[in-house]
Image (cartoon, rainbow, N blue to C red; front, side, top):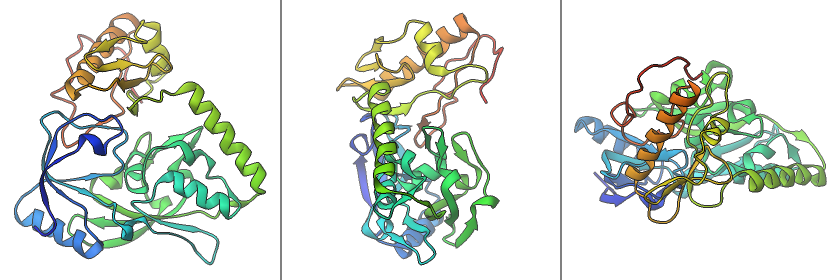
Length: 306
């Protein structure tokens, strides 16, 4: 396949900095090359996974079978202001850039995006959120490509977003989005909101490499509080440790492996289940694989996650 690399290390392409290599890896230059890659993979029965900025994922130490595609070339990083005041952005645009672009145009409502370490494409799949806001809240339309290479635009009202997922992104690729028109607001007011959010993040989230929140919040509880109550802050397995700042963050102290992180996840799940009766389910994605075979079975499941 054109432009495809073999055994590309993925660890440094993720925010947690762990994991092995992709069997095949490509960064297409545009939609035409992307379509060709998908068609070639389909002809050869090769599995395809899409990598954004690598947040909210754990790459297994054994690596990822099949083809990993990243939409990081300039074609996918375009951002522009439309004549009707909406913002169009490609899959490779960082959410932080969206926030800055909106601020320069004096549009408010995007400030919560500033601290989310993801790009448009990956954040669509997870319906990324922070500070009480969700990506789906500020979208107008989404441009998708099917795995056969067909392109179509869907109004956000017709998509099925939920807590850390978008149903349609299981069967399609997010090529870009059009954001709703923001509210015209003074620059000082927008900057004040951004500074407030930034201050909150710095006080409540670790600076060392992590994949973001490890577990979903269970119904009737908060994952971070439950983990903290079970005494896990600072606890480590190999180079992976539970953050002293926020217990729902597992950090890489510099030499962690994916196995370290997964062992810590299993330890936490078992203890929280035993002591608190909650079943914590991973929010982070096991990239290129499924959690089923990696999670230790729990004896009983009295409460489930939302």
